[in-house]
Amino acid sequence: MLKVCGLTKRYGDSTAIQDISFCVKTGEIVGLIGHNGCGKSTTMNIITGYLAASEGRVFVDGEDHVEQARSVRRKIGYLPETPALYPEMTVEEQLRFACDLKGIRDKGDAIWRACRRADVQKVGGRLIRNLSKGYRQRIGLAQAFLGNPPLLILDEPSSGLDPYQNAEMRDILKEAAKEQAILLSSHVLSEVAAICNRVVVLSNGQLVADDTPGRLREHFRQPGLFFIVGEGRMEVFQKVAAESGWFSDIRTENWDRPGMFRAEFCCGEKDVASCLISILGENGINLIQFGAVLPDLEEIYFQLTRDQRYRGMD
Amino acid sequence: MTAVWKKELRQYRTSIIGAVFLASYGGLIGYYFVVGNLLAMNGDITVLFQSVYSTLIVLIPILTMRLFAEERKMRTDQLLFTSPVDIGMIILGKFFAALEMFCLGSLPIVLDVAVLAFYGCFQPLETAGCFAGLFLAGSGLLSMGLFASSLTENQVVAAIVSYLMMILLWLLDYLKYYVQGEWTAKLVGYLSFQIHFQELSSGIFSFSAVVYFTSLTALMLGLTCLVLESRRWK
Image (cartoon, rainbow over all chains, first blue to last red; front, top):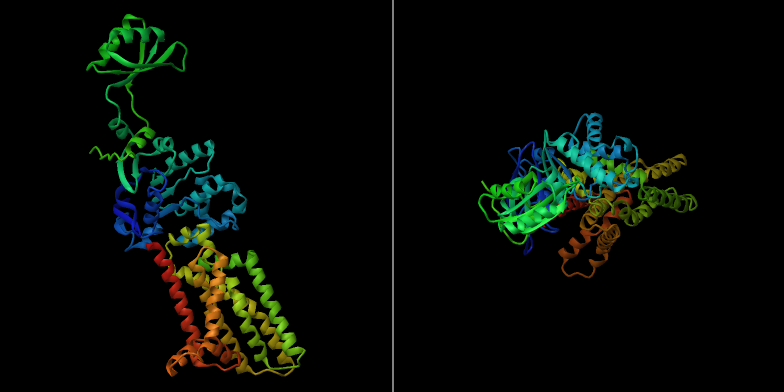
């Protein structure tokens, strides 16, 4: 649905983004992450046509966003970092105006659907200036939903939302992704990991990673670092594991159920499972769970943005 | 274009700016009519138009200062410029909304003309010329204000830039006496507001004045388009 090819934007002598390329397919939620000023909003602004690229091209549904600008813009629903709302308008007036701009004919139906999806039906008659930041964000989202465009560009959609609204927003976006392609930016990496099928990481205006969260975690995992969840006495495990000589850097903690614990350790042996079974079985500890410790997205993000360039695993 | 036009009219209707413009413009028209025509027992409608013309320079920036400046400040320009509407159409939508407000504000003059006509002082062609001139001059000044508004995100700065541009064009008439060369003096004289204002407000429907104000309007709207388009590339 969206294909970004070699996008570069220069402001005088400084380069905001350089040679950015990625794709977003229908049914996908792609998270664009990076530190402040790394070029996320610039990339989104170029895709939506608000800014012009110095180099590179953007295709939406196969159409060039410069040559077929009007057609492309009809296919994009955009929620900017600050929702583009007129404070002196009521929610309904705002959405009617957006419908007029987009050339949507059945305005009543489009507004009803968008409000239902963004859950803002109750505030239709209220002035935007009197609404909370969370509601404004959702009205901005409803505005992006108008006309059911096949591509949604959402610049920090969860900004200003409380935890409940955040959870609702995730559900809304997951539902939308069934029939739309979504590109979103966020600083909340746990949220990106929870809802995005793919992550595009920008650092200093350059693309440093583009892959699924799972594959990124697998790629960046520390070799030889494992965990177990066991049932039995934690102190016994600590003792026998240390004495066995197979394990090092052993860290243990009580698990969320009584009588169970979680332990992380390093093991240089090839057959880790055999080593574990031999010491657990002999000491009356049941093995509930065992696996490699994978880094969370935040750790990967820190590694990537320390000037380490990651290339896709394909 | 109609979407932007309707939105702007609605904003004029609900905002203090629209009310201030209509009240002050209407009040000044009434004042000029009472003092210049009724109390002076003068049936010449051009007296009223001449006074109204000089008022426009003060009032029109009030009408235009927020048109693009406010959109940029509130970041609502992102909605406009990412929509499937050409920048030219957005500019025209805003321009026609301001023009409609200006025409609405000028309606009391029709009443004044009717009062003079009641007392037998009515020159149809002269009055029509004055109205056409007012419309043309208003269009030129509005487009200038719109251009100034596209340059900044601060409404006050936009109004000040409008005033400066209008005053500069107004004062060009005095400058022609100090420039060297007959053709240069003529050119400076032609570019002056004042001479064209005077022609139109005297009921003289001058072709050069029509060309002047029409060209000025087109030039300013074109420059506005250029400013907004160039911002995408900066």
